[in-house]
Image 1 (cartoon, rainbow, N blue to C red):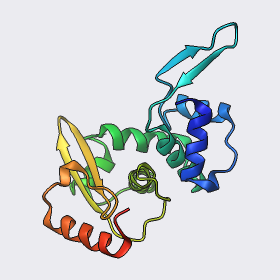
Image 2 (image 1 turned 45 degrees about the horizontal axis):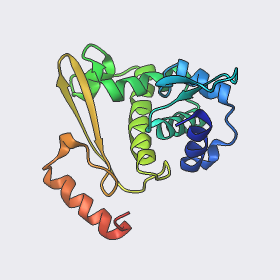
Image 3 (image 1 turned 180 degrees about the vertical axis):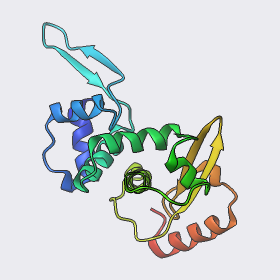
Image 4 (image 1 turned 90 degrees about the vertical axis):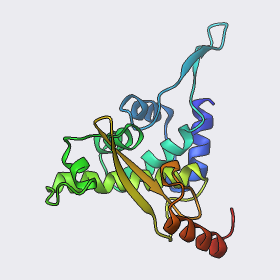
Length: 184
């Protein structure tokens, strides 16, 4: 998938994104707000190179644009992305808050926790081809594994994290939401 295709599909997921210049998208990728190109392919005859991006790129770009619209900084979005996709180091205050070990967070940590939650929820919705607003609840857990806290989110009626398989409460909520909202 090329950069123009990624931007077009991201705009379909998040129409409020407006015009996004390809150079801005490349800068956001360099700052880890969404994935970089997997490889560069030459077009031959001195026509330059084109980047090939992962299939999940439109959802991640739309999520980054959505959070930028909510006035999160690029550094906060990149941190939330890294934490959601790779886990949070155990020593981080946000990790301790997710596991219930720490109750009092400073303003910066509270903002990062909120950014992480929004990033996770929005990415799931965009991966499912939905807009960033979902009127139904969510099911969240945090699990410590190999020195990192993994934040898992499931949205009933949209997506269930494999780590939540077999959760009776989530299964019940999922069936209710699908009954109300439909299967797709």
